[in-house]
Length: 285
Image (tube, rainbow, N blue to C red; front, side, top):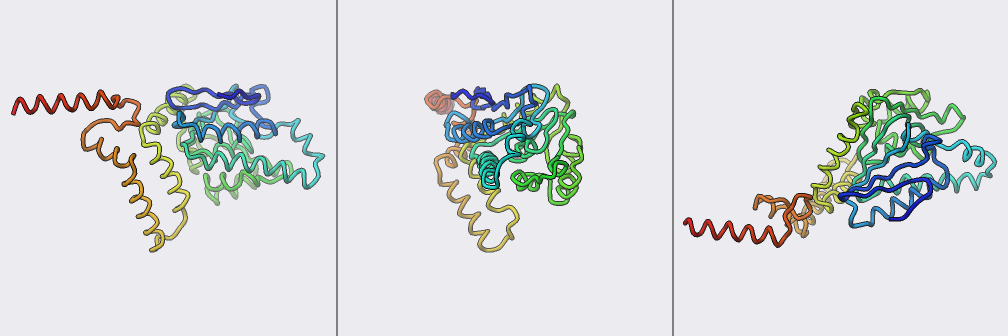
């Protein structure tokens, strides 16, 4: 697995943890981290050994937003340079949000500005009780533009009006109340909670998870009309007819784990055991 300067990858049991690895600056990101995250997300999404991804931060913070030295550098950029730089961040967030694999944000400590964008672009967010969130851009005369689509989708338009305009800090409990995170737990329970969610994710059909993510993006906010009904019927028909869909239904009827499940018996062994059970039943009959 590729080595990076600002992030670290840890792979095990089909799950990869992408660690933001700049703890000395509270994992604030710069152009290098943005480029490395973009590259890692793309490669991990294409890796058949990866079933799910966790995004986490080393040290006392998840992500404090933009790095001060990077901000000093871009302060002297021209309009065209600023656009190119901002587009890099927008592309990184889009790459994360559009991943086929399920993604979980493991959030602790401060998660400010762009750090909130990372959380919002993940499918699932789990935060420890100590987390503080802040959309601080307007304090600096800036706007939360590239992270805006993901943050607004995660917390809702009404809450976004308050927290984007006031730039006030808010707690993990408030983030949970407005729907920005789905779980809040004590710090000592953070990893156990994330691992429990990962257990569900890797037990699901990998192609079904990808298709479900695409389904959510396709139907959210759309009226339930004839066109949508036909679209959803086509989607489930395709999945039912797929090898994974057939295996899932077959395993359910045969009362066994599907082949993609971490606890599934090897195909040969499972087949042999079923044959032996059938032979014993025939003898009893």
